[in-house]
Length: 159
Image 1 (cartoon, rainbow, N blue to C red):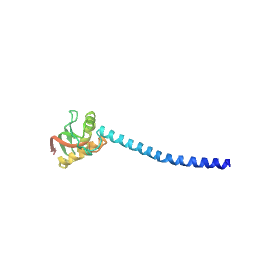
Image 2 (tube, helix red, strand yellow; image 1 turned 60 degrees about the vertical axis):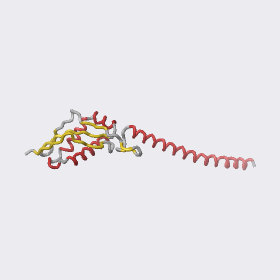
Image 3 (cartoon, rainbow, N blue to C red; image 1 turned 180 degrees about the vertical axis):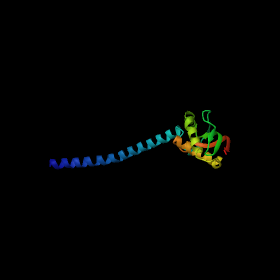
Image 4 (cartoon, rainbow, N blue to C red; image 1 turned 90 degrees about the vertical axis):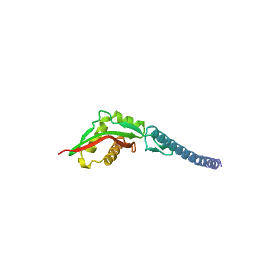
């Protein structure tokens, strides 16, 4: 009889304890996932990540970035020359600072966009879009370049 009562006691006491811990464990895992997601979102916003608009907060103030003197203004195409001075409107201070720290990489973007084109193929709107796309790719985050403005733009086909 002692054996039966011990088995009954261990069977009834062991089962419900294990089952009652399962919802608590699930709840803890969900809380951890939510905390990690919240941390990710807050870090992304703090570092200037995300698009040109923060959800529910309206448009982000564009920060102008003018190409520094180290970046040339004259670029060759396959059959001519393009002279341009560029100002970029960035989605925050962080991406503007990154560009200022790496003017050589920005110049490489300008060269790579223009060196494979004929002068007649270079249009300001198409060029703006391509520069915007390639600099966003260089930064590794979409929508950091809000707008590309030409302070100076001139093209000349060589004979």
